[in-house]
Length: 512
Figure 1: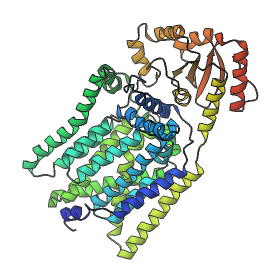
Figure 2: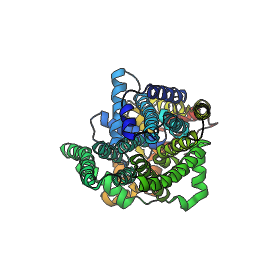
Figure 3: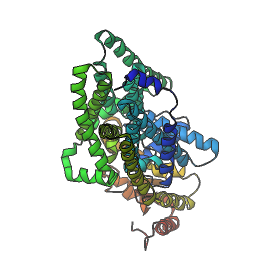
Figure 4: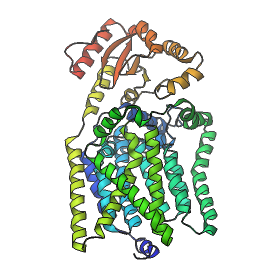
């Protein structure tokens, strides 16, 4: 094995394959289109981005449990869209597509450096590109876990290259996007320190801590200056720690496994094989590092340890297939390591042929998903919003209850930052709002929003009375239901029912 320091020095220059990998990823993601349905979770970060772009601090515009960067990063896409004169949501989706393509490039670099093999790097990047769940949000975002993966990959690459300040910095940025990733990044960094001489461990640890403190300090200072420090503490720390109840993967294995299959399709097997391969490679590297004090082996062990931490968290709290995003780069690294083991047992021609074959297969899986699973649900949502607003005065107000999509597509502002009630948020409102959720419902009645957009499903008991006495259900779209205040008059209500029915394709207007 060539000296790893010499390898890293040689690879410090520009690698043209990085650009090829990135361009390929952009093409694959662009093929998936930008008109995918705007779900509730995507609506949360889209609306948050619009609010931040309008000058409202994160958590003030919409209270949410994710990190503040999950609000700030989409705002960059909104700002770019407004400068360019096009749609806010398209601006966010273009930005997140670029972030997703950058992730594929980083997977290539990580696999290449970690296993000292360009072919291993390509195999890892191809595996990552094939993950259909990641493709889904690459062009149909914004979702907080996409930039989280970007920062995690930066952290792992810094760990592999022993750039300790950068490692701490990137772990902190990832955590400020999605809190649970802290376990993965910190585990990898701390395990990597064990491979250093004893005299170097404390200085390296200090650099990690300082790197992590820098973004956290800037974040705290920002929230203090804008007068939203309490909102930050509550959303970032208090609500996840006190109000969020973990849902173990084992609570319903059949349902959760089915969710993973729906989210990742055939690429789920690449994830499983990759994680299994990384576990085996980590075990082998642990034995090799103990025998030879091999610095390359300790990097593999560190990233393998991070994968165990990520898997443990995913099994501890699993709310849907996007929660597995934290495992995707680690699984891709496992595929790269598996490729390296196979490559070493083949001739150069055989190794290249095997890698090319895998890249073609993985690329075909990715392109097939992008082309055949294009979604145009956003068009129906836009039509429904236009149909409702066309029959109401320009100053008609919308209040969202777990339906931020209506706000995103209408350009309206919610009268309160409280609109999410799932995942412990409802209990938080019940504990902090005067009179609890019933007091919140009474406040909504006094506020008299023209429209209430309510997430599809059973009507919450705390708002049922207000809806029954003061509003009429006039229509629905796939993810939410329209309620309009009765005071707009029977003629307008009837027109709204027929307009929304025409958009949804129903045979008749929905009953009250």
